[in-house]
Structures are given as structure tokens and as C-alpha cells.
Length: 545
Image (tube, rainbow, N blue to C red; front, side, top):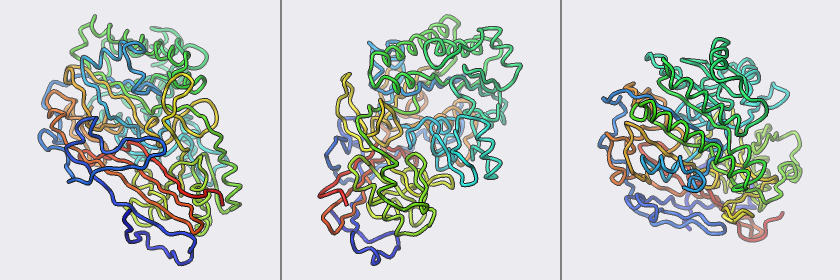
């Protein structure tokens, strides 16, 4: 391991109990094209390794950010909450699988981090990372508010706007951009208002009964009935599909639709990854997507609408006892720190308090990677030894915390035969930097989409806005973090000819008692857009202090 100069400009002489080691960043070039040639395989208990080669960037041909010069077809993005890529099989989801066989399957698509719902729910309609749009977690913290802000509740988000003096979403959205050019966005499905919070275009229609206007409520419910009562399940999934078909088959359909399907997330949380109830929820989703495909075919829309299927995150089984509160008690920093979920603010600003909190986290074997703000803007290493920076994970924002930590993960198999566990308590969840949480499906088909292609070029949830704008003939504005997915489009380069950069970023610390901790994160970069594949930690020596 190479020892590099300290980049943080902090006085380490005050803290002689530890020493920091940087590991070089490795890159991989054309070999990244194939799945078998990935720079790194993630396995529990293994250290990363990769060949150091030249860096190759995305091929330039056909990669302009301008608008497409093709007919302007409509676009539908279906976000299936909690859909792991390995759920999409001929047995579990035959309709979705067949759609991928006809069109494009993106083999390396990734959620934004943290892999919670709302950061991704906002990245999809903004084309930006959480560090840009500001919805950095499912729940946000503001010191002048008595309780955390639940980001799916409009009233609480409006209160955050009033107290902070900043908009709830701190960048422009797809609805606003389309509206500027005479196109309309419609957001549908579970808690979809956050994807079109300004109700641009045709607004939002939710199965929970929230509509952007009373006129929309009356029209939709008169046509397809009232939204079903109760939580997420087959009835709600069917209503979500009905609402899309009501618009799509009507006389004046929206030019772009973002449709959120609430399952299998609810079933996964309640019953586990790959549980029979989760598989039934997947079958229900697949049936409704099949209905949409069949109705498109029956009404001549197969060659008029591009369909993209993705998810907000993957899923992992919980098989640990990680106790966030106990970690805070062990640090014994009292009011000097504030914790909300897995976010920690060091209110005192004292470096000794940062270091103490981070050391407690690093020494607990149920904790995975620990991230801290960079000492200097753009640093990929955090301000505390053994941490990677929030700049690296695209998470630095005025609303983000000083410290972010994740549960440890493994590729162990659960009782239903599915890989991927974390040390969190409960049944199953997401939100971590495990590749099982970060890896999501990308399936696309339609008049502008290639046919019968599997692409290993990295993609992510930040790419839908620039891609839809390109397909609608709208110039892509500055400030987006995503890119146009040219390689899956008929007018773009062959995916096999697109090169991308792969890098592994590490930071390590060794304490005087012999305990060592190493954090690592693998990233892909295509045309300046960064995708996080997953993270890993390694410990040596005695971990308890």
C-alpha cells in the first residue's frame, strides 16, 4: 500500500494515536466493456484489487448534448420501487423480461446514494445528484424545526422552505423544463407529487388520493374509479396502471410520464428479499406492465412511446443488530453531536469530536463505510482519517450531515436463497452503499431504442432527464449531473464502442493499538457523470476500544 501526503491540511500532531494511509486510485480502460472484465468483484471479506491501466473516456462520436433530430415520440419512465435486477427473470417477471429482450437491458445501472427512496425520487426528475437537488435523505434535519422533515409530506416540505428560505428542491425539474418548451409532464403513482411538486404540465395523480387539482381528481376518478383504500398492494398497483392508460389512450396525452409503482418495496420490507409475498408483488407489477404493453400494441402506440423501466434502489436482507443509539452512547459526546438516522452533525465543530465519533464507528464491525465532509472542496478523502468524502459520493450539501455512515454488508444468502445482507435490524431494507442496494435495472424499448441489445456501459437515475429532453428535441440545460444515454438509442454509438473510466478510491487509518480500518468505493465515470457501484470496508486487529 502506498503512503501519500496528507491532503486535509489538518494538524495530526494533536492525535498521535492514529496514522492515515492513502491507497492509489486505480483505473480501468477498454476492458470495462464486458461484465467479465470488471475491475473489481465485490465479495465480503475481500480487499479490492484492480489492474492499473490507462484511463479511457467515453467515445465522442454521437455524444453531443444538443437535441435529437428525430421525430418526437412520447416517453414513459416506470419506476418500480425496490426492483432488484435479479428479480427480472422469465419466471418472475415474464413481461418485463420479454420487453428487455426486444429492446435494451442496461447491465450496470445504479441508484444515487444514499439508496433511499426520496433522494432517488428527486434525482429522476431533476437529472442531478442529492448534493445538487438537496433532498439528501428520506428525512431532513433543520435546527429550527422540532422534528425531522418527512420528505414525502408536502406540508412538512413547505415548512422547511419557510424556515430555511430555500426551495424544497434546489434545482429545476423536468416538469419546468418541458413546460418552457410547450411539453407536459404527468407524474403518477405512489407519493409521486415529489416528481412534479410544482404541478407543471398535467400535474400529479396519486393512488393515495392526492391530486394536483380538483379538476384532475374529478376527471380521473370518474373514468377509472376512486383510488383503492389501504396501503400498497395489487389493487393499488392496478390503479396506477389504470391511471396511466387513462391518460395515454386519451385524446390529449402527456408528452412525458413518470410513473411510480409502489411494489415490491412494501412486500420486501415486510417479508424479505425473495419471500413468496415479495414474488407475488413482483408478479402483480409485471401483470400491470404487461397490460400497458398490450394496450400500446392494440392502439398502435408501440412505435409511438419509448418505455424505460428502472428502480429507486435494490434491496438487502437485514441480519444484524446494528444499534445507532448505542453508537452515540459509546462516543459519549452528549450535546456536541446530533444524530438523525445514519447522519451525524458535529455541532461543536471541534475536530477532536469528529475524530472520536468516527473512531467509534470504525471500530464497530456492524458499521460499513464512514463518510465525512472534505477538508477542501473536491477532495475525495474525508477530513477524518479512514473516511471517504461526501464530495466523492455526490452528497455534499448544506442539508447533508458532517458524518454519514452505513451498515456493513455481505453477499450471504438469506432463507429464500437470495444474496445480499446487511447488519441492520428488522426484516429487509435498503439505503446502504452495498452493491445489492445500489445496483438497479434499466430496461428500455420503443421507437428510439435499440433492439436486442445488452449494454454494460454504466447508467443511472440521473440520466433520464437529459435523455428525455434529447428525444423531445429540447436543448439540454447546464447544471445537470446526468447524461444522454446515446448508446441505447438507435442514433447513438454501439455500446461495445463506448469506453468508460473505472476507479477505486480508498482511505485507511491504523491506530496505535494495532487496529486498522480501510474504506473503499468503486466508481464509474462516463462523460463526466459519476456512478457509484458499491463500497467495502476491511478491518484488522482488535476493533473494540
